[in-house]
Amino acid sequence: MINARVLIRPKEGILDAQGKAVEKALPALGFEGIEHVRVGRIVELRAENDERLQELCEKLLANPLIEDYEIEIA
Amino acid sequence: MINARVLIRPKEGILDAQGKAVEKALPALGFEGIEHVRVGRIVELRAENDERLQELCEKLLANPLIEDYEIEIA
Image (cartoon, rainbow over all chains, first blue to last red):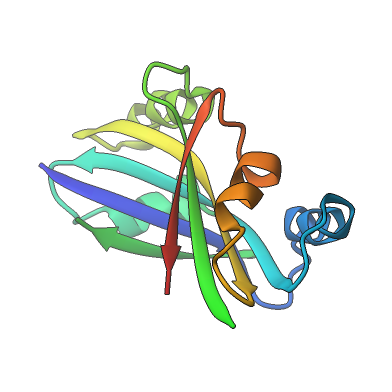
């Protein structure tokens, strides 16, 4: 079995509503000097092998139209 | 400026509804041998320094009651 980690992020140029919401909340909480906030998802799983992980991302975990994904094998 | 990445995951023992939903969808899509699926969030940002990142996680990014977080500095 392998441990895999999939990072899923909004594509560059796609509105990242959660990231914008965080940026907007920062000043009211007293945080300065923090920028370029992007919020995505992380999916961790155990698999027998990595053969079909890309397909899994395309079909189930990510929306390839608006999201990029990156697979890391631990 | 530093690039930081915050990984936010449901604590062990806390129901991970998204992870369970993925696991349930796998057989219908023909995926076998994938288990222990956990879904969390990833927040990437640029900051002047890492001094207040832990505070940022506690106050805004994560819910420490039900989520663990991990800060990685790139």
